[in-house]
Length: 131
Image 1 (tube, rainbow, N blue to C red):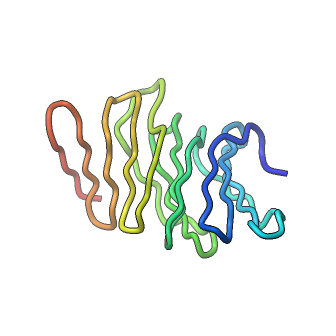
Image 2: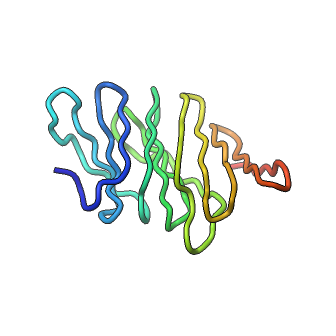
């Protein structure tokens, strides 16, 4: 079993990653056996998840952060703040192996995250902040 209110799901073919919105966690499941490998605590209200060759990316809507985990062992790489409001933050996420794109419903932005820069795109143009 996974945590309370399973919400988002992604797979790299070997593992299935499930966000548990009310447990504030992500569960890693072995894709071939269905066995739970581990459950990893993340920040507030994890919703969507994306996985690539190196990372698992999790949106945490209530804390306005994206959690970046290692896809090899689930260890925390970093927590990345993104634009948002006190009501709702990052919702959807897509990763391609070089970074991730995040939509933020509260701030009406799309954020690109990579190893060096954090770019936030909104109706006023492109803003950049070094992370």
